[in-house]
Image 1 (tube, each protein chain N blue to C red):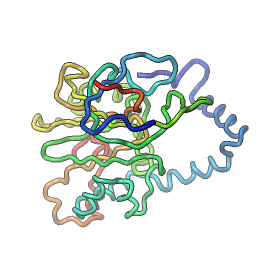
Image 2 (tube, helix red, strand yellow; image 1 turned 60 degrees about the horizontal axis):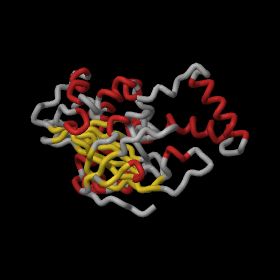
Image 3 (tube, chains in turn cyan, orange; image 1 turned 180 degrees about the vertical axis):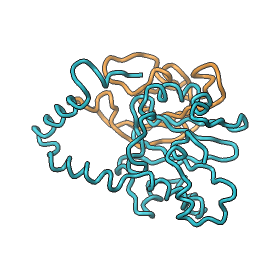
Image 4 (tube, one colour; image 1 turned 90 degrees about the vertical axis):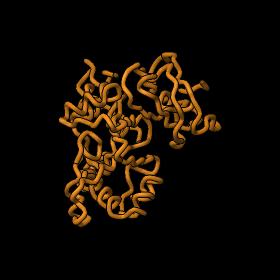
Length: 196
Length: 89
């Protein structure tokens, strides 16, 4: 795995500042635009978006189908635009046979708009390098022992695709409303590192 | 660059080690997987930040068996790879 993002030339913050100054200097982006983006991010990007999408998929089979077939279009029904027009959102579903887990081995690509900023472990070299090789072992370290009956599918978000996992709906939740279902979905469930 | 590989086709990730930035992770290099989806078209990141980014290429979701990658375990790893990272099996 690449360790290139930290070097003796300077801290990541210093390097980011240098890049920002260069981009402003050649007119690619202005400081005002960057500030607006950073203000908007925490206001609109949150795991609550992902939990709402899953709750709708659990309660509306036709929406679930559209979500699995073409997530970019389906999430627009709920007012979300995802991470931009060039980014493909792919939704994968946990079943009685399959468990899905998401990683980005070369950096930390993540469905930011739908899940908010990624957890620190998602960006760690340990998670990124190990989950592709030994997902059962890594998930066990999250106190999640995946049944040997389940096939594990790891998704390495290496290009302009972002992945979201639909966790298995827990039994005994048939009586819950869509809003209440959204409350039992967790961020780790949406990445695939925890059951619900 | 026209699309080269069909869904279901077996492909091999290139084994060579190019200089500079590359988004073909070492753990798939030289290994054989199956194209499972087409994930749009974009500029190859190796050249994306240069003055000659080249033509955009099809991006393929390629599924590898853990046995093929690591010689152990029964999971699969699916990763997006640009067309020029792949060759026919």
